[in-house]
Image (tube, rainbow, N blue to C red; front, side):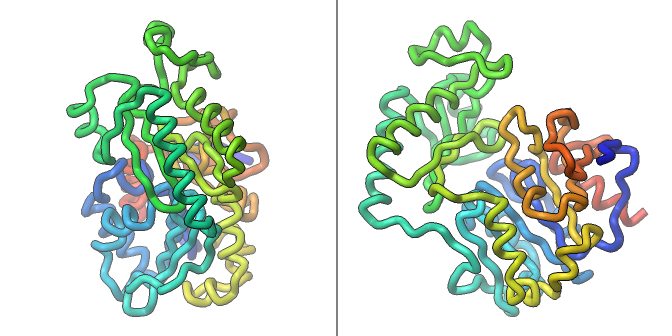
Length: 325
């Protein structure tokens, strides 16, 4: 596939956009910019469907992105939250459906309780100091640069540590921490021993929970079997779902009718946005709004790197605004 960013132009035939949220639509734990909301609203007015697929929880996507969008347009929006644990849609009046289109969150109450006990055991074992979620700028003001300070959020089907200060340590910083942190791809990442210990605890207690790297500095603890790929595939195979979005099976099979937006496609640094691409026809264009090395992308997929002046959510906004020129 051609990874040359010089060829990126707006696709006038697109009908469905499958998009990441954090740093693609909005900065982490803050509302999308008004300009972004205007562009997304315009896409919906044109009849294009939006499928947000994110590690964030449903409520986060709602207050940051969906709530500012006019209610009468929300029926064209799907939300796959907690890395695909559930996929929700909207009624014609803009309200959320009473039940998700898709869900794998079926743990017993006892399992849910044990899961949370083990999370706090990890916090204690690694001497982590936890904070609620907030913008990274605000977090750094409160927590400083201590690698052991993390943001912790319980999203229901997923629990997340945001290891803002500990995912890219120098050898000197790593040596100052009691935990042994192995070098991984030239980096010292506190998330690695946390992940390994979590796997051990969940295995010992026979809990169907999988710890994995997420985003730039997250560790996600998710229900086993949760996958952005599986969730996207499952939902887009349902004719009832497609018809609610004004789409057909033929639209999904036509690569020109779908586009993927994300900012983390690298297979080296745990990029999960590639899993959206893997759910679709390989020829579907995926645009990476982070400056990543195309050599680190999965082979055979049409993933291109945005080459504008801006990147991340500002790069996406630039891309959207250029279509009006």
